[in-house]
Structures are given as C-alpha cells and as structure tokens.
Image (cartoon, rainbow, N blue to C red; front, side, top):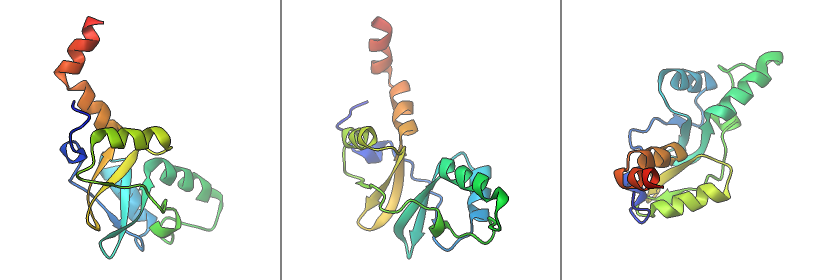
Length: 141
C-alpha cells in the first residue's frame, strides 16, 4: 500500500447516511441490517455529524431506565459534531496521522461540501493485509 496514494483509493463510497431529524430507530435498523460501524449524519446534503455504532449502543443502554425511546430520539441528539474530515485528494498517510492523534475510527471524505466517502481504520488494516508487498516483508522478518 502506498501511503502517498489518495485516500479515495481505499475509501468506502457506498454510503448510507441519515438525516439529523431521523429517529434512532432508523439508526438501529441500519446498524442491524448493514455491516457498518459509522453513520454520517447529513442536513441539506451537508455533513452535520456522525454516529458510531459504539456511541449508539452506549446511548441505547442508557435509555433502558428512562422515558426516552429510540422512536422519539433524533440523530442530532447523540451525533458527534465537529467531525474531522478529509478531502478525497488527501493522502492515506494524512488519514493515518488523524487516526493516531484522535480517538475515533472513521473519517468522512469530502468533495467540496458533499460527503463522498468514508475511510476507517478497518479500511486501512484491510488494505495492508491484502498488500502482497507488505505481506512478503512481514514474512521475511
């Protein structure tokens, strides 16, 4: 894997998003149906935040003894705001540096003001594990 390649070469582009006014019942359905762990939240096609599966589960545990429900709680109430983003032209090494400096595992990828993809630590690990050059170097050590 060339760390100087553009992040768009390994980002996921088949995005599923939710609107900030959608209910957490919709978020639960998406997490249960699809093998994803991060859900961009949009407002008028612009990124408003992100909901991780971990944050969703933490919230869900907390509402067990309250009057809240997934149906009447909006995405905007639990999403992480002020999310770090990258441009599709940024390099993979930049994404790695962002992951190293922060405590999150996915970065939305932007083209102008639109979310066009997402890259996660899993995407980077998968690319490394499938890179024959990296595998050969590891096996020779």
